[in-house]
Image (cartoon, rainbow, N blue to C red):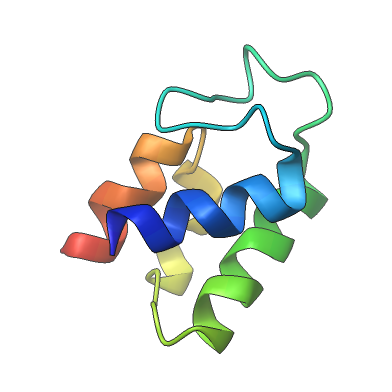
Length: 68
């Protein structure tokens, strides 16, 4: 699942995205991109709790939330 999440994040944020990518180190990552990632994950069968979307600040956050 971790690899699929990173793959989806890369498709939206760019090839440079990795598990350590965050809003702080990728200036093109905004709240719209977060929603695009969450929607793409949902389409891939990976769910992130809706009430926690606002907490996402890094790819590692998404991995952690999807595993819960």
